[in-house]
Length: 337
Image 1 (cartoon, rainbow, N blue to C red):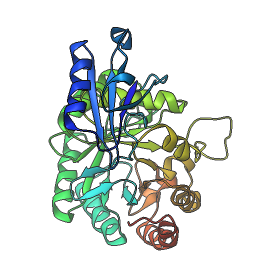
Image 2 (cartoon, rainbow, N blue to C red):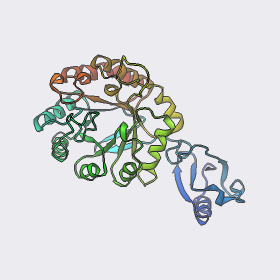
Image 3 (cartoon, rainbow, N blue to C red):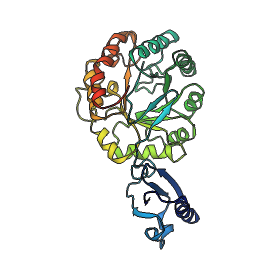
Image 4 (tube, helix red, strand yellow):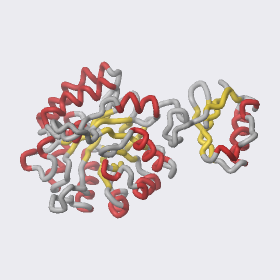
């Protein structure tokens, strides 16, 4: 449940309520808004049986929370969160573009990608050092060698860096080199990995699972935030349906739904959703128009030679054109890139 305090309530009244909650063995989550303070109660509320918070000084009302996720719930934190990563911010006033190759193939490829996506306006470099592939014979990534290239590219260009981690071993390596961790669709419900990401100290981008409901997705985010890490960005990347015309079906409605359920930023990955290069532009425009906080786009110097996801990757020139075409949509959404 959440306890909504009256406007301009005294700090003594807030302290009294929080102390009463903690004395009953529950945790407190404070959210200080412009007008009111909200006290979130985390734990088994049955321990508070017989306590009438509505009668306490400074309390406006008590709102029960029926959803199983609490800390990522908008009722706990009514104001939209802003997530700072290196020198950029992901949140309600910005439109963040993450771009780069699906897989880091070599040093020169990644540095070239970093330079070009930055010139076009991206503030994040994405790149895969660990690749969870359907076939065990497909390229699996350069692992730590690729992470070292990511660190160099980020240092050289000033871009923030994000890389997917697929295991506890991969996470332990990645935290030494990148600015943000990505939990991919296949690992959305790898709960041990989620908990470790929550303890990592780095911001986390959590992709929606292949056939996950939005509530399952938010519960996965709850695993991360419950370990003390509130810096989470959700990423809608399409879900598996009966449709075969695209690689996945982009659930564009996930953005407004998340807006009603959670305070976390949500970005869209049109590359994985479409699986087809020519569809990336219209889906990107739709993402900006629907209110997404950003995009994750695959870019490669020579998509026809890419070791992973070439058919959906943009060339440098195509990415530059897309960034220009997106400008009026971002402006209409009243955001800054």
